Each structure stands twice: as C-alpha cells, then as structure tokens.
Length: 158
Image 1 (tube, rainbow, N blue to C red):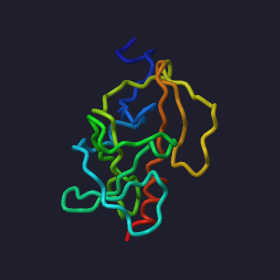
Image 2 (image 1 turned 90 degrees about the vertical axis):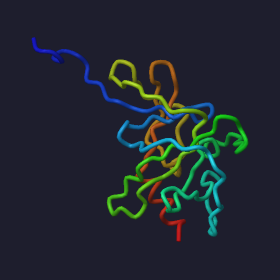
Image 3 (image 1 turned 120 degrees about the horizontal axis):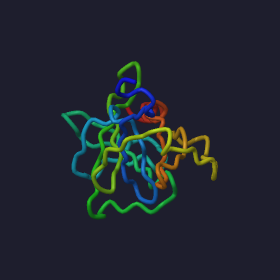
C-alpha cells in the first residue's frame, strides 16, 4: 500500500475565534490577519453584524462581527481583537475581501471526516450567511458562506 492510501483525507482549515463559537474556513479562504481598528459605519441601513468599512491596501473593506450576528455583546475595546481578512468569493471580483472580527489569532486545524460532525440544533436563521454549525473534535464552529456574505455586503456598499 502506498503512502496516503487507506488514510482519511484531511483538509487544512482555519479556526477564527469569535466569542462563544469559532468560524471554520478553508485555509485558502483567509488572506491575512491585521490589527483591529474601528470601522467607519456605512451610509445605508445595514444588519447589526455589519460594522462598516476599514481601509486596507488603500481600499475600503467591509468588516463584520459574527458575535453581533449571534446576538452576543460586542466590545470594540476588548483585548486581542484582530481582523481576519478573507477572500470575498464573488465570481465577478466586485468584493475581493471581507474582514471578520477575531478574538485573537486564528489557528490552523486539520479537518478529517473522523473529527467533524454536523450540529443540527439549534437551527440557524435562514437570513444568516452561514452554511452549517459543526462540532470539530469537541469544539463548536460555524462554517460561513463567504459568497453569500459578499453578496449581502455588496448590496450595502456604494
């Protein structure tokens, strides 16, 4: 048997700590982590989880708080806040990056079929740009739908 046969396939992922639950993304979906900075609110009405935009690489980048999406308190003065810069996943390239507030440094994880399981309860609101709630080796995480999130944000931006 050659190396790798019979072994469970593993994907490289990133866990972004966001309060009571983390986000699980494919490693390739994240670009970099930057220091937290206050966002400039949007001129249009937006969901509470959309904090506004920050300048990144001389462009405005929308920033979101998963804590706010989940109804948790969000304190922009909390220690160790960062912004995880993620690819927007829009095929037309109109929103190349989305900032997600992180409560610390995201960490790499190996995701295998043996350590990940769907968490069906409680059901997620259909308006949230979230694919699923999962259990990753005993740690709860949400899998965001970055393409849908980008679509929502693109409608709010000038």
